[in-house]
Image (cartoon, rainbow, N blue to C red; front, side, top):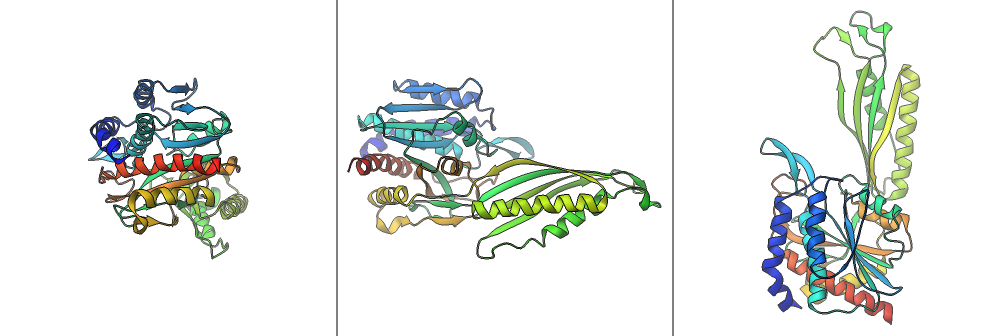
Length: 376
């Protein structure tokens, strides 16, 4: 297998460089979809596209048993050298390369699965809505095992090592609007001070107390009120909230507490507060069976000392919606060490590209071993 991967190296790196140089943001991955689809079509693989969104599904094999491999295809929108632009600083360009590379390798090996393999090229992970869209379309309804992959920062997983699971936390993002009445600076009783309302929200959020054994946090990440006139008390403001929790149950409790606080403060200050969910991401629920299979593939590829057990990460991933919404799916995500610095989402993020070759080998072996396990 390693010989075949080495032979494919130059082609895989060319594909990566193209994807890296042509990033597209969530739900606008039109050229990315077409580029990847053209590569898959050259292999003579069955493809399913969608009329109302980007992304696609590639399938090889047939039968009732189904193993899935998923990649995200969108980029972030961030400031790079003073200019806002689409940017692959979360590694999705490498994830696409590895998932396509796994498909290419299996075809090169002439692997005939005793079932079906679905390669899921999913849009809009960064919005937290791409997985939900594909779930609605029934893409994973027939999948028994599902695998994913994510590059890991150097301080989490060193180069040469890999983890058989990432215990991502849940995340939820609210956008809010405070609607009160402006007042003269000398007559504060005639209006509702949106800044004071915002301060009250921050103060009350700090008083939320949940199970201390499970990490969670809530904080205001943006607040905008007032204008150039310092003698006007602003009645209107907009704000953003960021919620994090290491389990889906704690996230549910945290979200309910936040909504109650907003409702009570609106009543106390006699102001209207609109609160909307911008996006939310489920916490990981790793299957022991899927994790054990991937562990075996990592050890076979890198050696036993290079395997890391699933570890806790405060970051979020919409991959975990698949198991939350379809509990029968057994899933885990490969955490790949790659000398990634300075960190995920940093505009100048970079990593050792050779790690992708190990990732492809691990993913291919994981799929093959999964079918072997099912066949027992």
